[in-house]
Image (cartoon, rainbow, N blue to C red):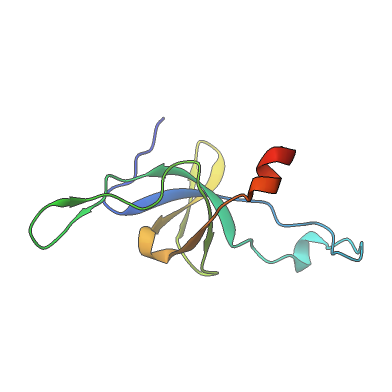
Length: 104
């Protein structure tokens, strides 16, 4: 099955939260907060402006993003928990710096 969001909606996969603090303390599953970081899996075609011209989304599949804590609707597609949210719920795109790109 393939899922394609409509209008200005995006399909997001949450990225896993850290399991240890910077001091090395392991965080149990019950104390973890849901991560507010994710990767875009699919995007809709966009919206239309007042003149009826198409307006594309500023994000694309594969972008790593930050979103609000309570953003989106949780769905299960092919056994995977994902989020569907509007582009306006996205706070920003996380871009890798040149140093991180070279290290990868």
